Image (cartoon, rainbow, N blue to C red; front, top):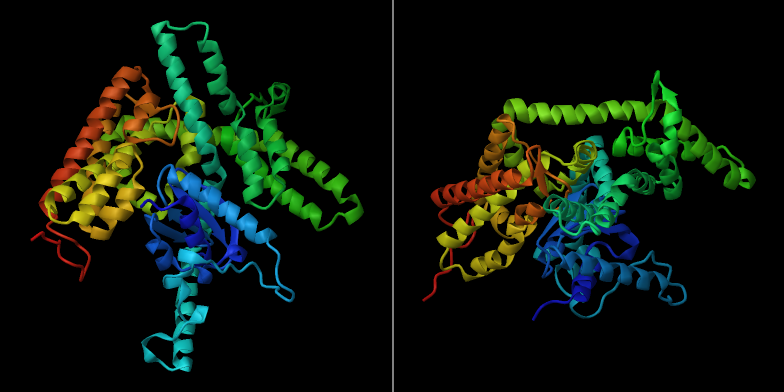
Length: 510
C-alpha cells in the first residue's frame, strides 16, 4: 500500500526534533529542505529509514530530505500543515515546552522513539552513567564535525541556493513556454498567439531581479519587501538617465548578481538602523534610510561592478568551451554527481541564470546533465548484473523513469551510492558524455538550455544553441547515448555484487 504524504510528514516531524527545532521549510524539485535550530536533535539515520525517503543530506543548519519529484510537493504541504497545527494547538496548564511534538500512530514508533535522549533504556546493558558519558562524547564528536562542515564558504553557498531554489518552478515553466514559442515562430504557426506566449515567457525573466532581492533579504534576515524594492532599481527603465564611472547605465545591468548584492547591502543597512534608530521613529526612518543608501550604492557602484562580473562569467564560459571543450565537459560531467550528493549543485543556479540573461541560454547545463546519463547507464548495468536481487531490481525499475527525466537522487541514494563502485562508474559515464558535448563546442557548435531545472530527456524542449535547436538537440542526444553506454559498460565490467563492506550477498531465488 502506498504511503500517504501525511504519514511521511508525520513520521519526519519528530525525527527532525519537533516543531520547535524547525526554523524554515522549503522544497526544490526532489528535496524537502528544512532549517533546523539544533542539529543534535535530528536523528538522520531514523529519517533515512522512513518509507518514501530516498536519502538525507545534512549540512550545517540545513537538512535536505530527498523524497523525489512530485511527492516532495505533497509532503512539504503536509509538513507545513503539521507545523501550523502544532503551533496553534492548545496546551495543558503549565505546559511551556518549546513546540515538542509527540506523534501518535506509526510516527510514534521506530528508531527515533527510543534511546537515552528520548527516555528509552540505555543500550548494551551499560550503566546509566556510562551511557550518559558515551552519549555526551558522541554529542561532542557530532558537534565538532558540524563545526568543521559549517565553513563560511559552505554556509554562503547554502544560503545562495536558498535564494534561488524557490525560483526554479517559474524558470522551468517560462523556459518551456519560451522554447514552444520559438518553435511556433520558426514554423510560422499561430502568429496571433506567439506575441502572447512571448510576453508570458519573458515577463518573469524581466523581473527576476526583484524576486531575487526579495528572497535574499528573507534568507539573510532582512525585511523581504525592502530587498525587493532595492533590487527593483536594477530593472527600472529610468536608470538610463544615471551615469556611473562615465557610462550611462542600462536596465538590467548586473542582472541577478547585482540584485543579490543590492539586497545584501540593504539587509546590512537595515540591521545597522535597527540598532540605532529610536523605536518611535523606526517605522519611518529605517525603511527610508535602507532604500536610499542601498539604492544609491546600487546605482553608483553595484550595477556597474556586477555588470563586469556578469560579462566575465559569460566570456569565461564561452572561452572555456571553445578552447578546452572536451576537457571542460569531462570535468563538469564527471564531478556533478558528487555535487548533487552533497546538495551543492544549487549554488550554480546564479551562474546559469546570468548566462540565460546574457545569451538566452546556459551552455553549462547540457554538460552537467550528462552526469544523469552516466547514472542511468550504471543503474541498468546493476540491474543486469544482479538478476536475482529482487529488491534492488524493483528499486531500479521504480527510480529509472525519474532518472531518464534527469532526476538523479532516487538512483543516487537508492542504488549507486549504497553500492559504492557504481557511483564512481556513473561519474565516468557522465564525464564521457560531457566530453562528447564539449568536443562539438570546440568545433563552434554550442549547446545550451533556455531554462534550468530539467535535464535528461526533459531538457529537449529547452535546448537551443548558436546554430539552432535542431543541431543542439542532435549533439545533446549523442552525449546522452555516450553517457548511457560508458556508464553501463564501466559498471558492468567493474561491478560484481554489492560493494557495501560486510553487506549481504545478492539474494538468489531457489
